[in-house]
Length: 447
Image (cartoon, rainbow, N blue to C red; front, top):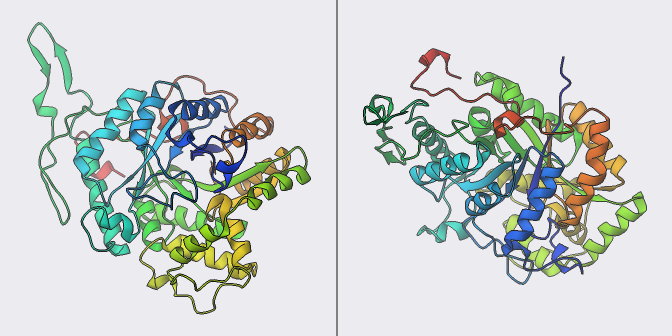
């Protein structure tokens, strides 16, 4: 029997996930717009035989430009360039169901899947925040429930579009003058609450059938959506116990939805800060924390907690009368994670800003390569993760340290691949089947 293997995804973000990473002498403050920078990161991750790399995104300027590098390239465009600079690694782009249309987005992902030879993945987000809403003619963000209702219909339409071509449409019969079989084209003719989409996609069915479907919400609505659709889930968990509970809950939900729980891979985020000794790693972490501008973190934390400016005090704990999660329409699960972290560890606002500076709520871990590998192995073997979303604090050095010093340990323990093997799709990397076209299988056999 083949031993269960880790899945590793490289979450790439300009100079690194720590908000102060751009201030280090080694960092290039213009890296977020530099294709060569991303090519280098992709090749490092591919040298480490990572399953995939991932780019976050949103249709809004996320932070004040004074705080950190704020300009980002559109991810599907960037991943198309990275597809020709790599051979094996999966390419996952974030795209919003709130501020896109199904036809155009389905076409773009099908195109990336063709160009990359079957390595495309879609991180499906619903986009919280009034700032993004106002960029699209809305006065405020839609409610949390409405965003997920729209996302479900959006994805249903996208699946119809990807299935609008059967796999063997193209016959290319030069002698008869017949390029394709029109009987195997199936226009969606969708009429729903949020979308009306008539015609078939103008891109043939791609190598994977569908891109790998990834989701990152951990709220109740997010977990219901993930159980129905997601094949990989990026999540933020601070403790082993919380991660185990999330893992068990989502696997159970997938089973209840009629799916194989092994077909949904759960990848918590981890921000590793690596040193040759634990003291060296802690020193690296302290250098980053010393470069945090606390005023920026204070304003960001007040927005996350839906507080008026000036309410928080750096050397005091969070107020006792914060609103409950039920009153939050934005990032519900992240709100709860941050509040629980602050309460559990009795952190001052200053300390909380320091903890969030590296991973915005994801687990941060400073230690030797062996200690990082131990933490990963523990969560993996104790039912908390199928793999990890690796979020280096500083790029490219943090990714290089992980690939050069942690990956060999994971390989030696038999937890991670030593090579890619035959050229395959992203679904192959994650051990997932290629979805059958809904027009070529009996309805009762579909999952």
